[in-house]
Image 1: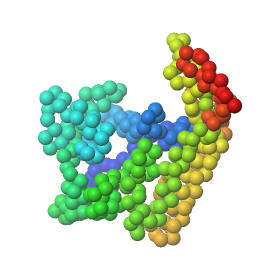
Image 2: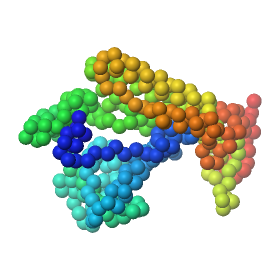
Image 3: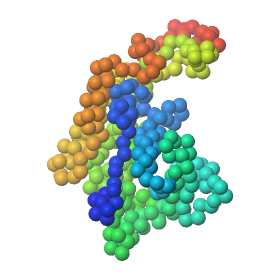
Length: 316
C-alpha cells in the first residue's frame, strides 16, 4: 500500500534484488555455500543488499547529472555494529550529525565515486519516537495519511518499544534471536506465519559437519605459502541441499495454504525461477571454487593436520 501511495504521488519505486545466482537461497542450496555466520563467513549483507543497491545506484547516476541523496532509516542503538560505523564516520570533514547523518558513501564503488551522499534523519530518534510516528502521526491526513499503522502492528505495536524488535531477513542466521518474527507470530493476524520459525533451525542444521565437505590436508596459496586453516569445512553436500530445498518449500507451502484459506497475504521465499535454478545447479554438480566434490564429509574421522604440515594421527 505504501508503494502504491508513493506511486500516486509521482515517486518511482523499484525493488532491487541480487542477480539470480547470488540470491540467498540459490547461493546456499544451488551453489552449496553454507549459510552465513558472524565469525568467518558473513557474506550475505554485501551480496544480497549492498552490491545490488550499488549497481542500481550506478545505473541511476548514469541517467542524471550531479549528485544524488540516499535517505536511510539507520538509527543509533539499532545495532552495535552499525553504531560503530556511525561513530567512525560521523565526523567526516569536520561535519556533525545534527538532525541526521549526511556523508559521502560507497567511496570505492565503481561508477559512483563522489556522486552520492546519504542522509539518516532518524539517527537520533528513540524507539518510542519511531512507534509514535508509525502509529499516530504518519497515518494522519496532515502528515500524508501513510498506511504505516500495520507496520507498527507487525513489529509488535507498543510492546516493540520494550523488546526493540526490528525486521530483517526471516530466520536470519546471524541474529541470536529473531525477536521480530517471534513478535509477529504472537499477533492473531499473523499467527499463520509461524512455520517461518523453522528457517533458523534449518540454517543451523545445514552448517553441521555431517552436511558439509571437508579438506583432508594442507592447502597452498598461489605464492606457495600454506593456507591458515587446514582441513577447513566447506560446501553443503547435494543431499543436504536437497533436504534444505524440500524444507524451505514445505515451510512456504504451509504458510501459503493457510493464507489462502483465511484471505491473508502469501509469502515468497522461493519463486519458480529460483527453485528451477537451484535444481539446475545441483543437477550440474556445481561446487564453490576450490572444491571438487570428492572430499569427505566433515564428520569423517581423520588425523589432525597442522599448518606446519605435521600430523596428529587419529587415535582409535
